[in-house]
Amino acid sequence: MNTMVDKVQQKEKMTELMSKFVSLVSYKLPDDVEGKLKELSEEEDNRLAKIIYKTMFENQKLASELKRPSCQDTGVLQFFVKCGEDFPLIGQLDRILKDSVYKSTQETPLRHNSVETFDEYNPGMNVGDGSPSIFWEIEENSDKVEIYTYMAGGGCTLPGVATVLMPGEGYEGVVKFVLDRMTSYGINACPPLLVGVGVGTSVETAALNSKKALMRSVDSQNENENAAKMEKLLEDGINAIGLGPQGLKGSKSVMGVNVVNTARHPSTIGVAVNTGCWSHRRGKITFDSSLNYEISTHAGAEL
Image (cartoon, rainbow, N blue to C red):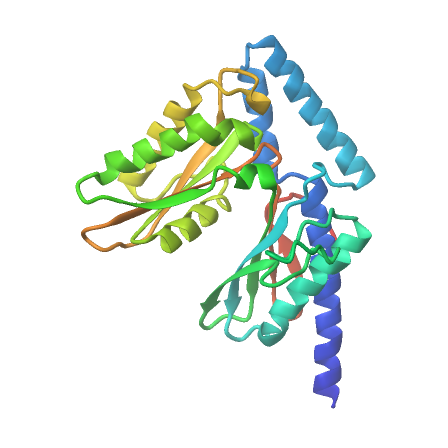
C-alpha cells in the first residue's frame, strides 16, 4: 500500500514539475538560441533587419518578465524521451506528459492547438488523439529519464517535407532537395531558422531524424566528418538566399543546419527537412529516480 501511495505522490510531483517546465519553454528561449540570435544581430548590416532583431529581443524580455508565451502560436507539444529501464515511473510517463500539457495549457496559459483531424473539433486541452507526440528510446542499466520538450508551431512546421531519392541522385540530391525547399518555403517559417535535415532509408526514418536534429544545439556539429561538411555547405547555401529576420532580407537566413543520419538501405536515400523558427522553443530536462532534476538548456532555471 505504501508503495502505491508513494508512486501516486511521485506521479503528481513529476506532473507538476513537467507542467512548469513546459511553461518555461513557452516563454524562455534556450541559451544557445538566445546567444545565436545576438550573434546574428551583431553581424547584421541591414538597417531593417537590425530593427527586427531589436524587436525580437524586446519580445523575449517581456515574455520572460511576464511569464507569458513568447509567441501566440505555442504549437503542438512534442516530447523526445530517453528513459532508463529502471526509472520508477516508466509505466506512467505517457500519462504524466499528457497531464502536464493540459495543466500548463490552463495555467500558463497556452493556446489550444490540438484539433481532432476530420472532426475539426478543438477540445481546448492541447491533448488529443496522439497529441502530444511522444517519441521513445529505452536505455538499459539506467534509472534516469531525459526529456526534450518542443513546441512545434504551425509556421515552422510548414516547410516540413520528406522523400526517397531516386537511385543515383546521391548526396548531391540531398543538398538539392533541401535547398529547393528552403528557397520556396523557408520564408514562411519566421527566419532565422534552425534547419533539421534527416537522412535514412525511408520517409519515416528520415522525418524522425530531421526532428531529432532540431533538438541539437545550433552550434553543434555532426560527429561524421562528411555529414558535418554537408551541414556547413547547406548553411552557407541557405544563408546566401538572404532571407534575414522574418524573411524581410538580411545577411543570414539560418541559425544553423543540423544533420542527423542513420544507416540506410544501399539503394535508397531517404531525406527530410524540418525547421525551427527564430523563437525555437525547446528544452531538455533530466530526472533521476528520486525526481531531482537538471535543466541543461536554460542555465540557472528553477521550477
